[in-house]
Image 1 (cartoon, rainbow, N blue to C red):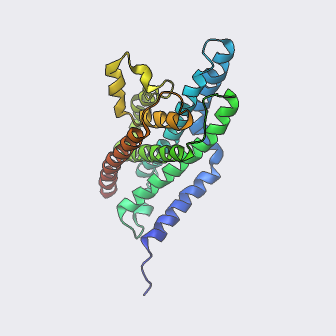
Image 2: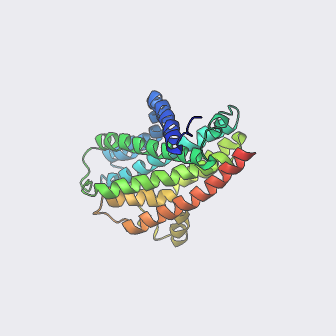
Image 3: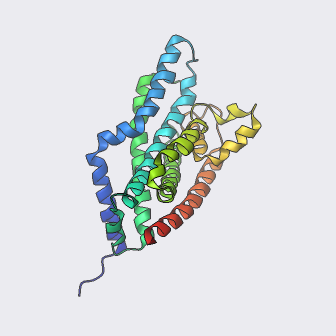
Length: 261
């Protein structure tokens, strides 16, 4: 009689498969998740400053926000879209649910894969955006540890959000997800402007705090442009931890219900 396969080994095999697929489709993955943010960099970080419509210092506030959007979109889509497909027409998730591991471990693997893809997108966008925008006086990489922490927690928050949305939204309503949830999240996520800029609009300023992108963008501003106004790092890290925990709980429950049904 063969010894049971350790759950860690099964988890590693599932993760290796997802990373292999990502590596094989790396070009389409980067185009899908970074094209829109990079277009904003070209327009607002290069063209408009060159034409004199936007102050050159705007790039220091824009770059961290663009990085946050890339991270958010890649992590969310890396989990939500495959979940919608696997539970929908392909039914591919059934093969994974037959693996000799708890159901929640299958979902956790998808979240980890989403975190890795968020990191890849951020690592790609940062140097490309910096190259397009040119020198940014306030830009600093001295807080690399904080930058990595915010990036990891931000990817985790949006991967768990993707798990919840991917298992809780029917496939025929995928357009609704991006039109009603993702688009407002991006434009009200303080990616194109600092959170402190909303001070004249106190209702909006505090209402947007339910959006995890606000904390990702502000955390990246604090790490990349520490000389400019930004949220305190401890507040950012604490908020992302709490949001990730809440979304993890919701996502796991939705995944289990969908898997059992």
